[in-house]
Amino acid sequence: MTDMQAKTEPATEQADEALRRFADGFSSPRRSPVLHSPSEHGLDYEDVTFCALDGVPLEAWFIPAAGSSRLVIANHPLGFSRSGIPTHLQPWHADWAPSGNGFEVDLVPDYKILHDAGYNVLAYDLRNHGLSSAANGGVVTHGFTESRDVVGSLQYVRARPDTREMAIGLFSRCMGAVSTFAAMTRFPAAFDGVRCVVSPQPVTPRYIAERRLAVMGLGDRLDDFNTLLRLRTSVGLEQRTPQEWAKNIGVPTFLYQVRGDTLTDPSDVQAMYDNIPVAEKKLQWIEGTTARWDGYMEFQRRPQPMLGWFAQYMS
Image (cartoon, rainbow, N blue to C red; front, side, top):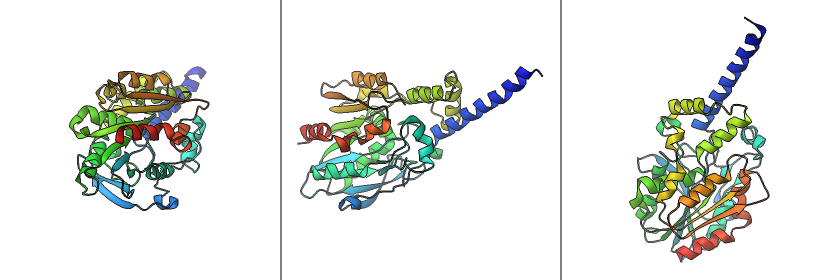
């Protein structure tokens, strides 16, 4: 064996191991705990459980707004729970700080803003996240299976005596957004009567995979990564296609995105927006940051455009 071969083989083994670890995390991301509660903001709420379309039990909060006939259903990004992600704590900090996202995202203030604006809120954990049940072997499929959770949330509020007649809007974030787009594609009848959608930072998984692999020095291994992903989840990148699903959105839709987000590319959200076939749509760019997490904090910092969208279509 030559010296060159001796040096190359360990390097190849290290690259292969890094690729396997990335595929494992992409397939079954670390669960974030439900660290915060609506009670921290003086909100009354119920802990509720409902079933996804395929029977998976999902955990949620129902936050009532007295006298209101409007309801916003909120889900969350990949790796989050309904209360956010503790990226200021280990081991989440080590996972996300290198991309500039090493600070906590607490989503509960979003529900306070919505409540105070006159909306009832249902905030739920997607399958394999937060306190919701494990399903499909514990793997994440970026909407392919999570779309059933979106439909389950709609079925739940239409079955509750106190919410069944309410005007419904959706606050679908990141993977929750693409799960909503997938549900609109696969189960369009479930969205009859839904008034509008607000969706921060929907993303095509291929873009995140390409960016992360490039940072790891594995930019030429996307096909190998996709093979591992299919072996772990049965659902390859070619089946996780929110740009295509966007063509089936049939309600007024407001997208917003960090333009300089280091984890994706602005062309991805632009393509989704362009593919939405309804006239009532809006795309808002967030400037001055490269941190994806700033996109999830935008509603707390500058909520008026999103509240205006809900008000316009849910009044």
